[in-house]
Structures are given as C-alpha cells and as structure tokens.
Image 1 (spheres, helix red, strand yellow):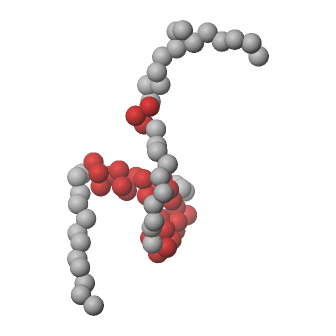
Image 2 (cartoon, one colour):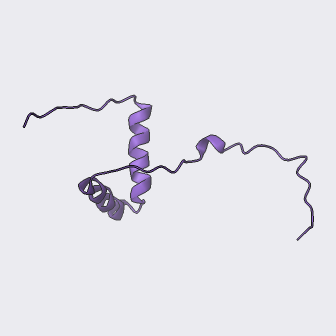
Length: 71
C-alpha cells in the first residue's frame, strides 16, 4: 500500500442519487410475511421488493386510501 494517494483528479460519484438511505420503519408482521413469501417465490429479497413497490407508488404519485373505522 502507498503511504499517500493523489485524489486531485478524482470526481464525485455519478451514482450518488441511486444510493439508498437506511431508515427505521414499523411494518405489520403480516405485511412483512407477505413480502417474505413473495421473496421466496421471486428470488428477490423482501427489502428490495418493498422498495420496488414503494418506488412504483411514488413514481405514479399514488396516495393511500384511508378509511377510519369507528369502534
């Protein structure tokens, strides 16, 4: 290994906007199980499946339908 490296010609990461940000989110167990089963069927990790689904919702500007139930 060199004792020093020259980064004067370096450039910013062109893929920086494609990076993912780690967050903490609370998701129902049944929802996680659904995506885990789907992951087993597709061979895609359940985190990636959730991300793909949310990305599609965001790109299509979908809004959730909220129904309040009186108990």
